[in-house]
Image (cartoon, rainbow, N blue to C red; front, side, top):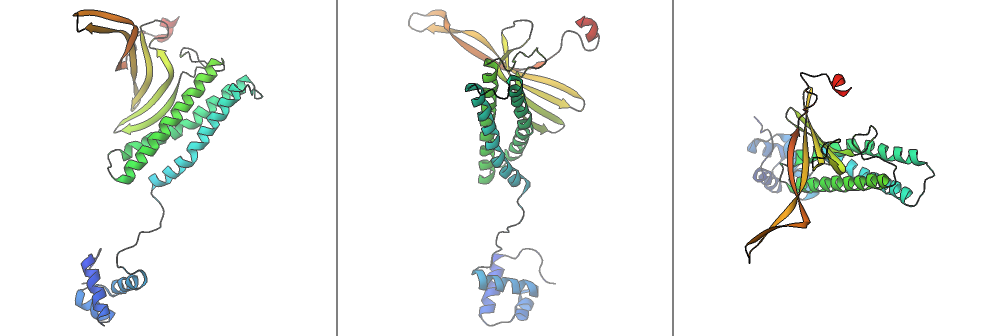
Length: 278
């Protein structure tokens, strides 16, 4: 039976050597147990390209490569749109009107959300891979995500300073946070949100805790919420020479931690939220 599958480099070289020695295609095929058409293809490659190895195919790129090409093209579009909206309010180009400018920022955040989700999903598929191409693609997508999120945060804060957007999370039309990515971990779907500025942990009570990132962790129909928070504490110092202890009131430091948000009032199982509200 003729051989099947990929031929070794040694076998390819033997086919060429026999052909150069004057043997015909059929003779080589029979002596080496290689299909006749394969012998002809290898000799043809050797004559035309000077080698017998398979050349890289110029076929359709993989889904990740095609999406990376799209990401490269779309990234400057979003960045330019954010810059344009930023210049409009800074240079007082309010020909669109205050409400139209605020709506344009919200629309940009809405348009960037699926882009950032896809960037994060692709990055997570590349993370375990150690090939140079995978590492390069991972680094490129990470830079896209970080730069775009920084630009969007700057844009929202600028519009908030001009009283065009509200950052109070308790308000219905607030733009206190925006989506920065989504990934799937088995049965879990994690969606991350970034707060444009540190937001109080509770809207009505000052607990001294401030939120920076929120993760919505969804499993089936249930969703849990995890928060990256910090608390400012006094920087305690020790005088090594005199053995004295003290606190530096002008040098506060932040203590960061991640915790799960649990609703305490009203209780989800025993209380009616409408009765509790009124």
